[in-house]
Length: 186
Image (cartoon, rainbow, N blue to C red):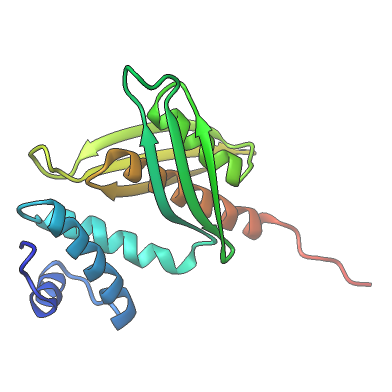
């Protein structure tokens, strides 16, 4: 599929891939598909699967990724990240630095969403081939014996990294709520 593929073709492709989504989830995934299609010559099945998985998860997020700008390279030391997140419906932004672009991005997330979780795994895979391939990033966080994985996909590896970290934090927040003792009422 490509940037000229329409909504009907996208819906048909979703059915071929085994997805049955509601209208809102389809619209969200289709918007992300068009964004990827504008940046890539060809969008593969693996790209679409990553987009749909991203769209389906969004419904339960307390923290939502909104935007990221990273400045790094040999002339920009230390690397800088400017991040925008929506947290419980409120838009927040921050600038942070780090030892590298990933560290700066993760430091920005920690500044907006303070936590004590440890990063156990940071892994990047190309979903498809070519220089315009979508990166799929996996982040594993551990806090108080609870371990969660988050995955993010984007043609920009730093954006995929931020999405993965935010997804892991959302899962951690869900685990915290599930393990919190119920209030005792007299």
